[in-house]
Length: 242
Picture: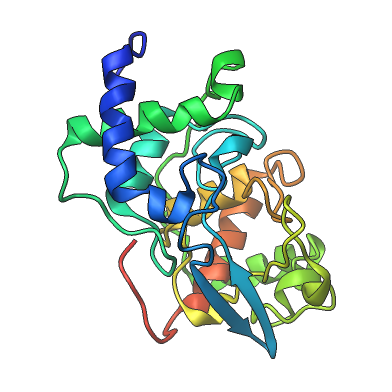
């Protein structure tokens, strides 16, 4: 992570990068209303939804290492800008310098007043996954956790995203959103055990996916849920790197 006050020249440099790389999707106001107003359409279980570019003016980010409701760290933003988001319209930007990536992050922050009023959250500490994660025993317990936490309401009994609430879900902007189909392949936020755990603990801000940080306090239960979801993803077609 880098530190220090953001200099005007960094923001100016970031604007130049943004105008050449990002504005076409995210718009010149950062509101996600660029020339490409629709990133793509997704279809699942007979439902079709429109996927829009991120609206930076809200200061709400799905993929973070920080608690639900908190701003992401610069490292979180750098990871997304650098690696992109697989299975989405957000590409990797490893072809531009790290300095340019840092600058565009500084510029993106000018779109929301949250960055002037709040500090990023403190990243959650996530230890390496226990050796038992991925085992049949852990996954079996995780299936019970999945049921107890009522994950099936959205994700369905077999993780296909076809739960009874799936047709009614909306994001914070009022747009229809599909629950994740675990049988379709890796998560957008990453599919290592630690990355899946991070998603469960942070939640996906701006979506109906909540944080389980408080709702699931037992560490073993958390990792068992990870095991079960990894089992659902195992052997899914179209695996992609995160």
